[in-house]
Length: 111
Image 1 (cartoon, rainbow, N blue to C red):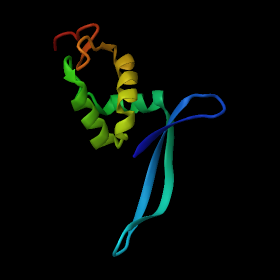
Image 2 (spheres, rainbow, N blue to C red):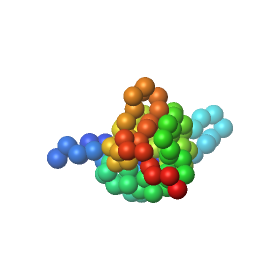
Image 3 (tube, one colour):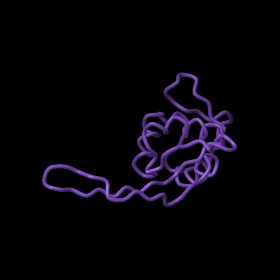
């Protein structure tokens, strides 16, 4: 799962892919191990996601649907979906006039 943090030195935002291993006993769950497997900046994560989202993103895409895809396929924590969608909006040249759907600033040419 990707979680977001701020660098204490430079103040930039980074996403960390965190793997948590849980041990189950008869009465409770306990954390066995936590491992950071990857660290990327928000720009790098947005570019990575952009390559895989081509089939999901279209003019008028619902932001909630886009967040669902980010959580399901890219393991982005729900609390950080809005931050990543804001970055994707910039990278893809989109705007959100009704605060629910994303539209391209320049319509894509017909194919």
